[in-house]
Length: 598
Image (cartoon, rainbow, N blue to C red; front, side):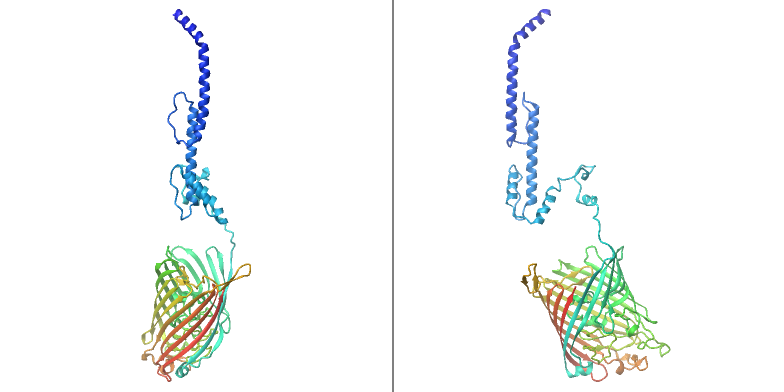
């Protein structure tokens, strides 16, 4: 053993110089290999490499692996960037090794963007990469959903202070010329040409809390004193009920009624509305919409008194007073069978009203102690042609009078009754600039001689020559005014004018109402000399008959807030009352209106 160890040591000492130079040569070769590997890693080599060869430094292999992963990440980023900046007419680049170069080329060729688009780009580019650690879910480690991100953001601070208010209003200036045949003048009176304000209203509306609304509106065109119109308090978003309104407001009946005066395509609403519909009354109403806002419903209860000799109470003074009578219930249900925006829609609906008629001890309602145990509740339906009296007369005019330019053409007279049922059907169809609207109404009056039935209907066609569609309010199932695509004359900041046509609309309507009383009512009409309901038909049914109107209209909308209207109304009156004169007569009305609202 000692001899072997001695021989090994002698061999090692003789080989030492050769090993030393061998080690130096290996070190130099390693340095050259590292330099060449680094240079090779800069080339677009595959991202992953195989196992390191024998004698290769493991750190070099790891460096190559990191460089490959970095190149792959840059390629994916360039593809995502291309997708976000892509124009609709560009195709996506292929997902291959050259996609990063293609994405960069497309981004450089992109068209100039607006300032707003440039400001929006960073949020789009880095929305998925600029996440903070707190925006990761702890359970899966994945990005959160959009809903989770929205819920994590605190709601913005509301700077609105209450109560709020907004002043609004509108006025309508009308001018009318009449042409009547002799029989028509003898029956209804000689209508006088005239000019006057049909309506001149100011309103304040706003909120006293985020979901509590109010409105106060007064009309100054009424002769005598300002009158109340739409004064109420409303609470929104109540469970099951929707919105609750208390005060004076439009009762939910008829799309013609709910569309609002400033939005009318004609100067007045249709004959059935003017004759039958309980309009503004004081009460409480609930209304709501379905989740998709295609279905609307409302129901209302209001008082029915006999104040100011009105069977449904007084509307202008917002007052209902009466010892006899009760309450009224009105409801309306509508649905959009088709809705493709305001440009194309089909609306259908139905409405119902039951009213228990009221009376008081004032003259016209009968007095306590008279025959029949007065006072008596009574019913009366009457209407002018489809152009209302200028000045909004407060007290009803007698038949055959020409006060305030437009006299009453049909009148049932005043007779004893205790209640009535009113039903209505409605439809609206719109296809671009073309609109069609129609309604039918029927009233059954429970009188002292049994049920009496009246009815009426209308159909109207509208066409906008300049192509606009009429707006539709899904919250109320009602129609809005036309907004021109191009105002008649618009000016920029440099005071240079831009000529436009505004919006032009032509319209036509046919409507009728039949107010014929049965002969059995004779002896139950109101006698003003005795304040009793014992007058014969020859004294009480002087306006009994049928009225039919045909109307042609032209409307020029200068802009969204002003318009000029012209209506030619031809009225056919068939008066069948037992008094003379009676028979068939005609009248023409040529009416203009200037309207502005704000």
